[in-house]
Length: 258
Image (cartoon, rainbow, N blue to C red; front, side):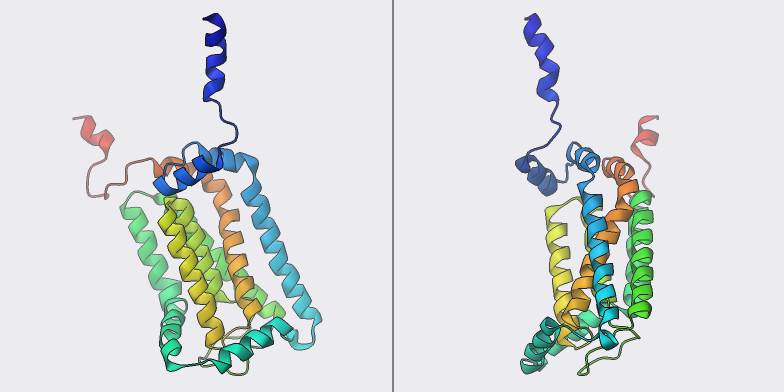
């Protein structure tokens, strides 16, 4: 008995969750034991740093090319896009263009999302979302002006200066990571990844970006979102387990005190 009692605490210590446990936590939204271990390993932060550095390296390579000329993969991809353009694909691409840019992406979506998070008592998530979107947009604009890459010649829409990286895909990837980490639901991740891929395809279809612009934007947005998440990780986990009833309904603590 004494030996069993001595060994008992060790049966509850799982320094490294299994893949099955990670998948179950992601699907059910119960990541109480998984998130602290992931943060302790620091692999998400290291991966995010590497991702951002790769985008900066790509920007540096473009600066070394005369006029930040497109790579062979860019021209081949664009040639395929132009050869298969059709009104069937143009309409949804224009919809994605509207959703991912302008006042809708910069003002409407963030304001509505932040307001909704605050209504459901997720103030740390709201702050995280606001910072992630602001930093992502800011870094994108800096790179656009530093690299100064010329956009493809066969554009179907008008866009601002600088082709690298794509602000639309950076914004989509940032939203995907933020909502995925805040809500920790498998369907949120899947929907976000699908949205980001559709944004990538629509930007190149419309000729607004080269393929490497969109890939760079996607990696940059995701990497920055993870870097900003790191200092909020514990607070977001605790908040995820808290009271999410609308603010006009009294909290559980207040209700239980009467």
